[in-house]
Amino acid sequence: MRYIILVIWSALLVTVLNYVVSSINNVEFDDPAFTKGLWISLVFAALLLVIDAVIPKDSPKEIGHQE
Image 1 (cartoon, helix red, strand yellow):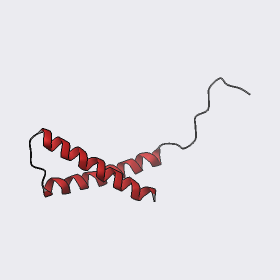
Image 2 (cartoon, rainbow, N blue to C red):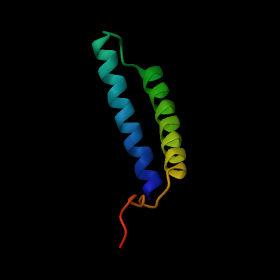
Image 3 (cartoon, rainbow, N blue to C red):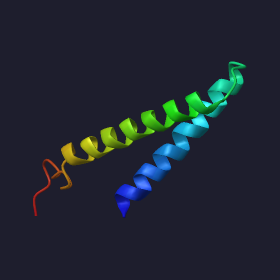
């Protein structure tokens, strides 16, 4: 379920970013731009999954703290 939500959020955020940047540059937001944005969002989601797999899940131990 979290992978589906990740893809939905990445598609939504990249599409909004694509729309805002095209509006600022006064460029038409048409179907090729939308499709390219969706492909970029899939790459972004895959990159986030790789980063999540690389980062360790354990919290770091405090140095100098003894019980």
